[in-house]
Image 1 (cartoon, helix red, strand yellow):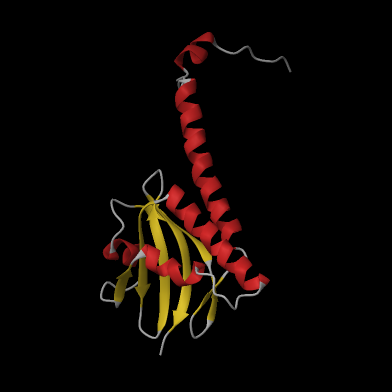
Image 2 (tube, rainbow, N blue to C red):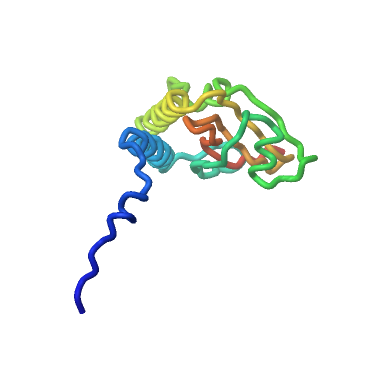
Length: 161
């Protein structure tokens, strides 16, 4: 069967996206994917210590106008009347990054990983906040807005009786 020649008319009607726009979008998508991957690597092996040890995981949300209690409740599908408390970002990391005199090599390494995680979040997210949702068994979110205004950060659990 003979090959069909491409119609010039079809070729002319094709919409061309400027190369700069394509590269800009690829760079933005790459940054978002790259940030999620960087967070995934940074939290590997990290646990949040409360009355239980809970794994810390990346949190990737949807686009938001602001980092707010209502927004995090909505994006995590929690009831609007859930108990929610906002905490200071620096305060959250203070005890996790403080190196005590009695620390051995392993504890120092963990504290250093928390320092690196904190710096990664500060460098790549804005309006960083900590939300604790629930009573006794808490869902903890450390989130901010990324370059595309998506909620992003980390999540974990805590138990406090």
